[in-house]
Image (cartoon, rainbow, N blue to C red; front, side, top):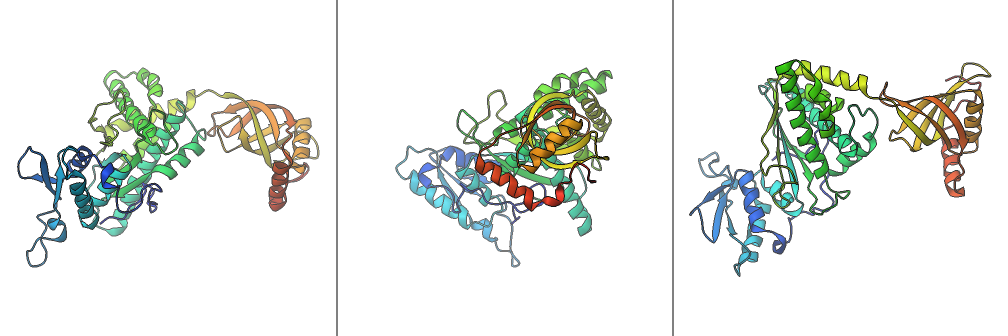
Length: 420
Protein backbone atom coordinates (compact mmCIF):
# COMPACT_ATOMS: atom_id res chain seq x y z
CA UNK A 1 0.00 0.00 0.00
CA UNK A 2 1.39 3.40 -0.94
CA UNK A 3 2.02 5.85 1.84
CA UNK A 4 0.10 9.10 1.24
CA UNK A 5 2.36 11.86 0.00
CA UNK A 6 1.90 15.42 -1.16
CA UNK A 7 3.05 16.43 -4.65
CA UNK A 8 6.26 17.84 -3.14
CA UNK A 9 7.09 14.42 -1.66
CA UNK A 10 6.30 15.28 1.97
CA UNK A 11 4.06 12.94 4.01
CA UNK A 12 0.47 14.07 4.05
CA UNK A 13 -1.26 14.72 7.34
CA UNK A 14 -4.66 13.03 7.68
CA UNK A 15 -7.55 15.43 7.23
CA UNK A 16 -8.49 16.84 10.61
CA UNK A 17 -12.19 16.17 10.02
CA UNK A 18 -11.57 12.64 8.74
CA UNK A 19 -11.11 10.31 11.74
CA UNK A 20 -9.97 6.74 11.04
CA UNK A 21 -12.63 4.14 10.44
CA UNK A 22 -14.71 5.91 7.82
CA UNK A 23 -18.01 7.72 8.23
CA UNK A 24 -21.04 6.62 10.27
CA UNK A 25 -22.97 4.09 8.13
CA UNK A 26 -26.24 6.00 8.47
CA UNK A 27 -24.67 8.98 6.62
CA UNK A 28 -23.43 7.02 3.60
CA UNK A 29 -25.38 7.27 0.36
CA UNK A 30 -25.32 3.86 -1.41
CA UNK A 31 -25.16 5.64 -4.79
CA UNK A 32 -22.01 7.50 -3.72
CA UNK A 33 -20.40 4.31 -2.43
CA UNK A 34 -21.22 2.56 -5.71
CA UNK A 35 -19.78 5.45 -7.74
CA UNK A 36 -16.54 5.38 -5.73
CA UNK A 37 -16.19 1.62 -6.10
CA UNK A 38 -16.66 1.96 -9.85
CA UNK A 39 -14.13 4.81 -10.08
CA UNK A 40 -11.49 2.78 -8.25
CA UNK A 41 -11.95 -0.23 -10.50
CA UNK A 42 -13.94 -2.51 -8.21
CA UNK A 43 -15.93 -5.13 -10.08
CA UNK A 44 -19.60 -5.77 -9.77
CA UNK A 45 -20.53 -9.44 -9.69
CA UNK A 46 -23.88 -11.13 -10.06
CA UNK A 47 -26.86 -9.55 -11.79
CA UNK A 48 -26.40 -6.22 -13.54
CA UNK A 49 -29.49 -4.74 -11.90
CA UNK A 50 -31.39 -5.38 -8.72
CA UNK A 51 -31.93 -4.26 -5.16
CA UNK A 52 -28.40 -5.23 -4.06
CA UNK A 53 -24.99 -5.48 -5.74
CA UNK A 54 -21.84 -7.36 -4.75
CA UNK A 55 -18.42 -5.83 -5.33
CA UNK A 56 -14.88 -7.21 -5.30
CA UNK A 57 -11.62 -5.24 -5.60
CA UNK A 58 -9.77 -5.11 -8.93
CA UNK A 59 -6.93 -7.33 -7.66
CA UNK A 60 -9.05 -10.37 -6.81
CA UNK A 61 -6.99 -12.47 -9.23
CA UNK A 62 -3.77 -11.83 -7.31
CA UNK A 63 -2.51 -15.12 -5.92
CA UNK A 64 -0.10 -16.01 -3.17
CA UNK A 65 3.01 -18.14 -3.31
CA UNK A 66 0.94 -21.38 -3.50
CA UNK A 67 -1.53 -20.08 -6.05
CA UNK A 68 -4.20 -19.16 -3.51
CA UNK A 69 -6.10 -15.85 -3.66
CA UNK A 70 -4.41 -13.03 -1.75
CA UNK A 71 -6.08 -11.14 1.13
CA UNK A 72 -7.55 -8.47 -1.17
CA UNK A 73 -9.21 -11.20 -3.17
CA UNK A 74 -11.28 -12.27 -0.16
CA UNK A 75 -12.89 -8.83 0.19
CA UNK A 76 -16.51 -8.77 -0.89
CA UNK A 77 -19.01 -5.97 -0.33
CA UNK A 78 -22.79 -6.25 -0.50
CA UNK A 79 -24.20 -2.78 -1.22
CA UNK A 80 -27.93 -1.96 -1.19
CA UNK A 81 -29.34 -0.15 -4.20
CA UNK A 82 -30.90 2.58 -2.05
CA UNK A 83 -31.86 3.57 1.48
CA UNK A 84 -35.38 2.27 0.93
CA UNK A 85 -34.60 -1.20 2.28
CA UNK A 86 -34.83 -1.96 6.01
CA UNK A 87 -31.40 -3.59 6.21
CA UNK A 88 -29.57 -0.91 4.18
CA UNK A 89 -27.77 0.62 7.20
CA UNK A 90 -26.62 -2.80 8.42
CA UNK A 91 -25.31 -3.75 4.98
CA UNK A 92 -23.45 -0.45 4.61
CA UNK A 93 -21.93 -0.90 8.08
CA UNK A 94 -20.70 -4.35 7.05
CA UNK A 95 -19.31 -2.92 3.80
CA UNK A 96 -17.42 -0.20 5.69
CA UNK A 97 -15.99 -2.78 8.08
CA UNK A 98 -14.84 -4.86 5.13
CA UNK A 99 -13.20 -1.82 3.56
CA UNK A 100 -11.38 -1.01 6.81
CA UNK A 101 -9.91 -4.52 6.92
CA UNK A 102 -9.27 -4.82 3.20
CA UNK A 103 -5.70 -4.74 1.88
CA UNK A 104 -6.87 -3.35 -1.47
CA UNK A 105 -4.84 -0.17 -2.10
CA UNK A 106 -7.98 1.78 -2.99
CA UNK A 107 -9.88 0.96 0.22
CA UNK A 108 -8.49 3.82 2.39
CA UNK A 109 -9.18 6.31 -0.36
CA UNK A 110 -12.78 5.16 -0.67
CA UNK A 111 -13.31 5.50 3.08
CA UNK A 112 -11.80 8.98 3.06
CA UNK A 113 -13.94 10.08 0.13
CA UNK A 114 -17.08 8.80 1.89
CA UNK A 115 -16.30 10.90 4.93
CA UNK A 116 -15.14 14.02 3.10
CA UNK A 117 -16.20 14.56 -0.54
CA UNK A 118 -12.96 14.79 -2.52
CA UNK A 119 -12.29 15.92 -6.06
CA UNK A 120 -9.55 13.81 -7.67
CA UNK A 121 -6.87 15.12 -10.02
CA UNK A 122 -4.94 12.44 -11.91
CA UNK A 123 -1.55 13.35 -13.39
CA UNK A 124 0.18 11.18 -15.99
CA UNK A 125 3.56 11.84 -17.62
CA UNK A 126 4.38 9.87 -20.76
CA UNK A 127 7.75 8.47 -19.72
CA UNK A 128 9.31 5.07 -19.37
CA UNK A 129 9.61 3.74 -15.83
CA UNK A 130 13.26 4.34 -14.76
CA UNK A 131 15.20 1.24 -13.83
CA UNK A 132 17.69 2.91 -11.49
CA UNK A 133 16.32 3.89 -8.05
CA UNK A 134 17.96 7.32 -8.22
CA UNK A 135 16.39 8.04 -11.61
CA UNK A 136 12.99 6.85 -10.39
CA UNK A 137 13.25 9.13 -7.36
CA UNK A 138 14.19 12.12 -9.56
CA UNK A 139 11.25 11.41 -11.88
CA UNK A 140 8.85 11.20 -8.92
CA UNK A 141 10.13 14.52 -7.57
CA UNK A 142 9.67 16.16 -10.96
CA UNK A 143 6.09 14.92 -11.16
CA UNK A 144 5.22 15.95 -7.61
CA UNK A 145 6.85 19.37 -7.75
CA UNK A 146 5.33 20.07 -11.16
CA UNK A 147 1.85 19.08 -9.98
CA UNK A 148 2.20 21.31 -6.94
CA UNK A 149 3.36 24.21 -9.11
CA UNK A 150 0.28 23.82 -11.31
CA UNK A 151 -2.02 23.69 -8.29
CA UNK A 152 -0.27 26.73 -6.80
CA UNK A 153 -0.84 28.65 -10.04
CA UNK A 154 -4.52 27.64 -9.95
CA UNK A 155 -4.81 28.71 -6.31
CA UNK A 156 -3.31 32.11 -7.16
CA UNK A 157 -5.68 32.49 -10.10
CA UNK A 158 -8.63 31.50 -7.90
CA UNK A 159 -7.73 34.38 -5.59
CA UNK A 160 -7.37 36.93 -8.41
CA UNK A 161 -6.88 36.84 -12.17
CA UNK A 162 -3.59 38.12 -13.64
CA UNK A 163 -1.27 37.20 -16.46
CA UNK A 164 1.65 37.22 -14.02
CA UNK A 165 1.15 36.90 -10.26
CA UNK A 166 4.71 36.93 -8.98
CA UNK A 167 4.58 37.02 -5.18
CA UNK A 168 0.98 38.27 -5.17
CA UNK A 169 -1.58 35.93 -3.61
CA UNK A 170 1.19 33.39 -3.03
CA UNK A 171 0.79 33.33 0.76
CA UNK A 172 -2.92 32.57 0.45
CA UNK A 173 -2.31 29.95 -2.23
CA UNK A 174 0.41 28.13 -0.29
CA UNK A 175 -1.64 28.20 2.91
CA UNK A 176 -4.65 26.75 1.10
CA UNK A 177 -2.64 23.92 -0.45
CA UNK A 178 -0.87 23.09 2.81
CA UNK A 179 -4.24 22.88 4.56
CA UNK A 180 -6.23 21.03 1.90
CA UNK A 181 -3.98 19.02 -0.40
CA UNK A 182 -3.45 15.28 -0.08
CA UNK A 183 -2.24 12.71 -2.57
CA UNK A 184 -1.00 9.24 -3.37
CA UNK A 185 1.79 8.34 -5.75
CA UNK A 186 1.81 5.17 -7.86
CA UNK A 187 5.26 5.62 -9.37
CA UNK A 188 7.27 8.10 -11.38
CA UNK A 189 4.65 8.36 -14.14
CA UNK A 190 1.38 8.78 -12.23
CA UNK A 191 0.12 10.82 -9.30
CA UNK A 192 -3.32 11.39 -7.82
CA UNK A 193 -4.08 14.43 -5.70
CA UNK A 194 -7.23 15.15 -3.70
CA UNK A 195 -8.90 18.41 -2.73
CA UNK A 196 -12.03 18.62 -0.55
CA UNK A 197 -15.19 19.57 -2.42
CA UNK A 198 -17.42 21.78 -0.30
CA UNK A 199 -21.12 21.02 -0.44
CA UNK A 200 -22.29 24.50 0.61
CA UNK A 201 -23.30 27.34 -1.69
CA UNK A 202 -20.48 29.57 -0.39
CA UNK A 203 -16.86 28.26 -0.47
CA UNK A 204 -15.40 27.90 3.00
CA UNK A 205 -11.80 27.63 4.28
CA UNK A 206 -11.89 23.85 3.88
CA UNK A 207 -13.26 23.92 0.34
CA UNK A 208 -10.71 23.16 -2.36
CA UNK A 209 -13.19 23.13 -5.24
CA UNK A 210 -12.41 26.71 -6.38
CA UNK A 211 -8.81 25.56 -6.92
CA UNK A 212 -9.84 22.38 -8.75
CA UNK A 213 -12.35 24.12 -11.01
CA UNK A 214 -9.94 26.98 -11.75
CA UNK A 215 -7.22 24.47 -12.63
CA UNK A 216 -9.44 22.59 -15.08
CA UNK A 217 -10.81 25.77 -16.68
CA UNK A 218 -7.30 27.23 -17.03
CA UNK A 219 -5.84 24.04 -18.51
CA UNK A 220 -8.62 23.87 -21.10
CA UNK A 221 -8.13 27.55 -21.98
CA UNK A 222 -4.36 27.07 -22.27
CA UNK A 223 -4.93 24.06 -24.51
CA UNK A 224 -7.29 26.03 -26.77
CA UNK A 225 -4.98 29.07 -26.93
CA UNK A 226 -2.00 26.87 -27.76
CA UNK A 227 -3.90 25.13 -30.53
CA UNK A 228 -4.98 28.50 -31.91
CA UNK A 229 -1.44 29.86 -32.02
CA UNK A 230 0.02 26.68 -33.51
CA UNK A 231 -2.65 26.69 -36.23
CA UNK A 232 -2.68 30.42 -37.07
CA UNK A 233 0.63 31.76 -35.79
CA UNK A 234 -1.29 34.39 -33.80
CA UNK A 235 -1.03 34.68 -30.03
CA UNK A 236 -4.17 36.77 -29.45
CA UNK A 237 -6.01 33.86 -27.77
CA UNK A 238 -3.75 34.01 -24.71
CA UNK A 239 -4.96 37.49 -23.66
CA UNK A 240 -8.61 36.51 -22.98
CA UNK A 241 -7.39 33.20 -21.50
CA UNK A 242 -6.25 35.16 -18.43
CA UNK A 243 -9.89 35.43 -17.35
CA UNK A 244 -10.02 31.63 -17.32
CA UNK A 245 -7.00 31.47 -14.99
CA UNK A 246 -4.13 31.12 -17.48
CA UNK A 247 -0.99 32.86 -16.27
CA UNK A 248 2.79 32.73 -16.52
CA UNK A 249 2.98 30.46 -13.48
CA UNK A 250 0.61 27.97 -15.13
CA UNK A 251 2.42 27.90 -18.49
CA UNK A 252 5.74 27.52 -16.69
CA UNK A 253 4.46 24.61 -14.58
CA UNK A 254 3.07 22.84 -17.65
CA UNK A 255 6.45 23.22 -19.32
CA UNK A 256 8.26 21.70 -16.35
CA UNK A 257 5.99 18.65 -16.41
CA UNK A 258 6.11 18.15 -20.18
CA UNK A 259 9.85 18.72 -20.58
CA UNK A 260 11.73 15.42 -20.68
CA UNK A 261 8.59 13.39 -21.38
CA UNK A 262 6.38 12.42 -24.28
CA UNK A 263 3.52 14.47 -22.90
CA UNK A 264 1.28 15.27 -19.93
CA UNK A 265 -2.31 14.27 -19.26
CA UNK A 266 -4.43 15.78 -16.47
CA UNK A 267 -7.83 14.28 -15.62
CA UNK A 268 -10.29 15.68 -13.06
CA UNK A 269 -12.93 13.51 -11.40
CA UNK A 270 -15.54 15.31 -9.31
CA UNK A 271 -16.55 14.02 -5.89
CA UNK A 272 -19.68 11.85 -6.39
CA UNK A 273 -21.28 13.24 -3.24
CA UNK A 274 -20.93 16.83 -4.46
CA UNK A 275 -21.44 16.36 -8.19
CA UNK A 276 -19.90 18.62 -10.85
CA UNK A 277 -19.78 22.38 -10.29
CA UNK A 278 -21.99 24.59 -12.44
CA UNK A 279 -20.78 24.89 -16.00
CA UNK A 280 -18.64 21.73 -15.98
CA UNK A 281 -19.27 18.31 -17.50
CA UNK A 282 -19.96 15.41 -15.16
CA UNK A 283 -16.94 13.57 -16.58
CA UNK A 284 -14.49 16.15 -17.96
CA UNK A 285 -12.25 14.98 -20.77
CA UNK A 286 -8.51 14.74 -20.01
CA UNK A 287 -6.40 17.75 -20.97
CA UNK A 288 -3.14 16.88 -22.71
CA UNK A 289 0.05 18.75 -23.62
CA UNK A 290 2.99 17.53 -25.72
CA UNK A 291 6.58 18.67 -26.26
CA UNK A 292 5.43 20.41 -29.45
CA UNK A 293 3.49 22.86 -27.26
CA UNK A 294 6.54 24.02 -25.29
CA UNK A 295 7.68 26.90 -27.58
CA UNK A 296 4.17 28.39 -27.60
CA UNK A 297 3.78 28.09 -23.82
CA UNK A 298 7.25 29.55 -23.21
CA UNK A 299 6.52 32.52 -25.47
CA UNK A 300 3.14 33.10 -23.83
CA UNK A 301 4.67 33.07 -20.35
CA UNK A 302 7.35 35.60 -21.31
CA UNK A 303 4.69 37.83 -22.85
CA UNK A 304 2.58 37.69 -19.68
CA UNK A 305 5.56 38.90 -17.63
CA UNK A 306 6.36 41.74 -20.05
CA UNK A 307 2.79 42.99 -20.30
CA UNK A 308 1.71 42.78 -16.65
CA UNK A 309 1.33 46.42 -15.51
CA UNK A 310 2.59 47.97 -12.31
CA UNK A 311 0.01 48.41 -9.54
CA UNK A 312 -0.59 51.60 -7.58
CA UNK A 313 -0.77 50.75 -3.86
CA UNK A 314 -1.23 52.48 -0.53
CA UNK A 315 0.23 50.05 1.98
CA UNK A 316 1.14 49.60 5.62
CA UNK A 317 4.23 47.68 6.70
CA UNK A 318 6.87 47.11 9.34
CA UNK A 319 10.45 48.09 8.56
CA UNK A 320 12.70 45.04 8.73
CA UNK A 321 15.96 46.42 7.32
CA UNK A 322 17.46 49.79 6.35
CA UNK A 323 20.49 50.66 4.28
CA UNK A 324 22.05 53.67 2.62
CA UNK A 325 25.52 54.39 1.34
CA UNK A 326 26.17 57.72 3.06
CA UNK A 327 25.21 59.64 6.19
CA UNK A 328 22.56 61.61 4.30
CA UNK A 329 20.55 61.16 1.15
CA UNK A 330 18.11 58.48 0.05
CA UNK A 331 18.16 54.91 1.32
CA UNK A 332 16.55 51.51 0.83
CA UNK A 333 14.22 49.78 3.27
CA UNK A 334 12.74 46.30 3.39
CA UNK A 335 9.18 46.08 4.63
CA UNK A 336 7.03 43.30 6.00
CA UNK A 337 3.66 44.12 4.44
CA UNK A 338 0.71 44.23 6.83
CA UNK A 339 -1.97 45.64 4.54
CA UNK A 340 -2.49 47.14 1.10
CA UNK A 341 -0.47 44.72 -1.05
CA UNK A 342 -0.79 40.95 -1.26
CA UNK A 343 2.93 40.21 -0.99
CA UNK A 344 4.81 39.17 2.17
CA UNK A 345 7.75 41.60 1.83
CA UNK A 346 8.99 44.28 -0.54
CA UNK A 347 11.85 46.71 -1.02
CA UNK A 348 11.49 50.46 -1.46
CA UNK A 349 13.90 53.35 -2.02
CA UNK A 350 13.00 56.44 0.05
CA UNK A 351 14.23 60.02 -0.13
CA UNK A 352 16.13 61.46 2.83
CA UNK A 353 13.11 62.75 4.78
CA UNK A 354 11.00 59.64 4.28
CA UNK A 355 13.99 57.45 5.14
CA UNK A 356 14.47 59.32 8.44
CA UNK A 357 10.77 58.99 9.28
CA UNK A 358 10.90 55.25 8.57
CA UNK A 359 13.96 54.90 10.83
CA UNK A 360 12.30 56.69 13.74
CA UNK A 361 9.14 54.61 13.36
CA UNK A 362 11.23 51.46 13.36
CA UNK A 363 13.04 52.42 16.58
CA UNK A 364 9.67 53.11 18.22
CA UNK A 365 8.21 49.81 17.06
CA UNK A 366 5.62 51.48 14.83
CA UNK A 367 4.50 50.46 11.34
CA UNK A 368 4.62 52.99 8.51
CA UNK A 369 2.19 53.82 5.74
CA UNK A 370 3.34 54.84 2.25
CA UNK A 371 2.23 55.05 -1.36
CA UNK A 372 3.93 53.92 -4.55
CA UNK A 373 3.83 51.57 -7.52
CA UNK A 374 4.32 47.83 -7.13
CA UNK A 375 6.46 46.82 -10.11
CA UNK A 376 5.99 43.49 -11.86
CA UNK A 377 9.74 43.19 -12.47
CA UNK A 378 11.12 40.86 -9.82
CA UNK A 379 7.72 39.39 -8.99
CA UNK A 380 6.02 42.47 -7.47
CA UNK A 381 8.57 42.66 -4.68
CA UNK A 382 9.73 46.23 -5.35
CA UNK A 383 7.94 49.52 -4.66
CA UNK A 384 8.92 52.41 -6.93
CA UNK A 385 8.08 56.10 -6.55
CA UNK A 386 7.64 55.50 -2.79
CA UNK A 387 6.37 58.61 -1.00
CA UNK A 388 4.19 60.02 1.82
CA UNK A 389 5.79 57.92 4.56
CA UNK A 390 3.93 58.28 7.84
CA UNK A 391 4.06 56.35 11.14
CA UNK A 392 0.91 54.43 12.09
CA UNK A 393 -0.40 54.40 15.64
CA UNK A 394 -1.18 50.93 16.99
CA UNK A 395 -2.56 49.47 20.19
CA UNK A 396 -0.11 49.31 23.10
CA UNK A 397 -0.13 45.51 23.03
CA UNK A 398 0.65 45.40 19.33
CA UNK A 399 3.38 48.03 19.76
CA UNK A 400 4.97 45.98 22.56
CA UNK A 401 4.91 42.93 20.33
CA UNK A 402 6.61 44.81 17.51
CA UNK A 403 9.25 46.21 19.87
CA UNK A 404 9.93 42.74 21.27
CA UNK A 405 10.38 41.46 17.74
CA UNK A 406 12.77 44.34 17.04
CA UNK A 407 14.92 43.61 20.11
CA UNK A 408 15.05 39.91 19.28
CA UNK A 409 16.27 40.68 15.77
CA UNK A 410 18.63 43.62 16.21
CA UNK A 411 21.00 42.10 13.69
CA UNK A 412 18.52 42.87 10.91
CA UNK A 413 18.47 46.59 11.59
CA UNK A 414 21.13 49.02 10.48
CA UNK A 415 21.01 52.67 11.39
CA UNK A 416 20.74 55.22 8.67
CA UNK A 417 24.50 55.51 8.30
CA UNK A 418 25.10 51.78 8.57
CA UNK A 419 25.89 49.22 5.88
CA UNK A 420 24.03 46.09 4.88
